[in-house]
Amino acid sequence: MSENNLNREQIEAAAAHLEKAELEAYEVTKLTNDYPEMTYKDAFDIQWEIRRRKEARGTKIVGLKMGLTSWAKMAQMGVEHPCYGFLCDYFTVPDGGEIKTDELIHPKIEAEIAFVTKKALKGPGITIADVLAATDFVLPAVEVIDSRYKDFKFDLKSVIADNSSSSRFITGGQMQRVENVDLKHFGVVMEVNGEIVATGAGAAVLGHPAASVAMLANMFGERDEEIPAGTFVMVGAVTAAFQCKKGDSFSVRYQGLGSISGRFV
Amino acid sequence: MNQEQIQHAGDELYDALVNRTPVKPLTERFDDISIEDAYHISLRMVERRVAAGERIIGKKIGVTSKAVQNMLNVHQPDFGFLTDKMAYSQGQEMPISETLIQPKAEGEIAFVMKKDIMGPGLTNADILAATDFVIPCFEVVDSRIEDWKIKIQDTVADNASCGLFVLGDTAIDPRDIDLATCGMVVEKNGEIISTGAGAAALGSPVNCVTWLANTLGQFGIPLKAGEVILSGSLVPLEPVKAGDYMSVTIGGIGSASVRFV
Image (cartoon, rainbow over all chains, first blue to last red; front, side):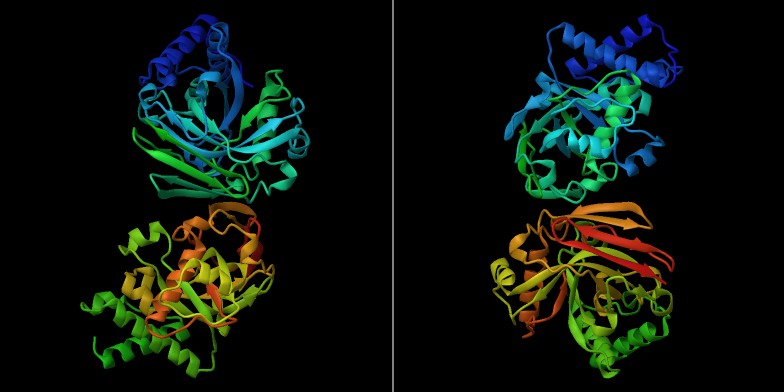
């Protein structure tokens, strides 16, 4: 991993700037405009500083997520790596629940699958097999992403600093043991207001959803961090992201894993 | 179009197929061509194939995705006829460079019927009850119209752009699978190029077969026991050339693969 070009003061200022935009739901210009010299290490340090700020106020971290995990999306962005983010207690919306649109900027939904671990994973060198052996169960999830950047336009460093556009998530449906799901080939059908807007299959996530968890463990390993046992991890989008507005309702069906629904109010 | 024009257009498309020489879009040459005219042209084209010794073994449904319907500005699918000469088996080489003009591959679920069934008035329940099994399928579509410059009438007249197809070798009872949510993963030369799910075809592959049975029923044509019905693509079309290798895997159903030569 690269070194820092920003000093501690700049990292804290950037974290405060982005977190305020998140909490008060307004757009900002992408961070690399303000700090063109920032490195990937700086970007992750800013994200971890946002996490530290939240935890210091008593916010509980309830899971992790991977982003930009489709090869197509990475090629389109000209990046070679996905990114990760953290999930907070107040991000959770119950299955069938309401998402308060006014708390967000320009939300989009993505169909995902989540892993819940039963053993710690610490990179480097974590493989799909390690992930499957450490998985308690998988279950469906819908992520609501909401970049704090104007028009959802960013580069990889800016999005990493912005907690990988994390904002809300819904989980529910039917949990399954990993040995009971064909994770590469299970299908997903996403409907908004009763119309099918996207379909996909597990392989859309880095070829196999467990590869995404392995990559997360290896990226965490670079910072000498581990994914503890009992962690909820969303692996990245199986479908294209779909922009939603107040009044929209959605329902996502997962092969062998039930369904998830919710609405924007 | 009058009878003579229809017959001539059908013969022209048949010649284009046999000689691998595409023709100009019919819609550029016949202002008044209707979809019904187009089906009559396709029947003439298929008649020529049967006269040359081919046997009809099933049907295909096309224009089942919202993206393709929007592109062609229609809100219904279309259909064509499958012959024995179009069918290839799992693992067999498919000689596209000798037989096709501008091939594109798509992953589908094929239905094989176990009893005759005729619309109109059929429901999805009737179709499922009449289905022997579903099987993975690669359809390789082709157009006898120059550069795929098709409007809906052009593709209907051209037997719904039928080319060749390959079936996998896992037959699954439709009772054992959720056909709307089953996932599809398509790989080309070892790389995953697209994913989708059953609902990408009119909400469910079963909806497509029901539409076909009810549409054909209006003309007194049944779906027959043993027929193969290709229910429509679940992923975007992919242009292919000799030397390419593709595989499709459908969650809970199985795989089909094909090597193009």
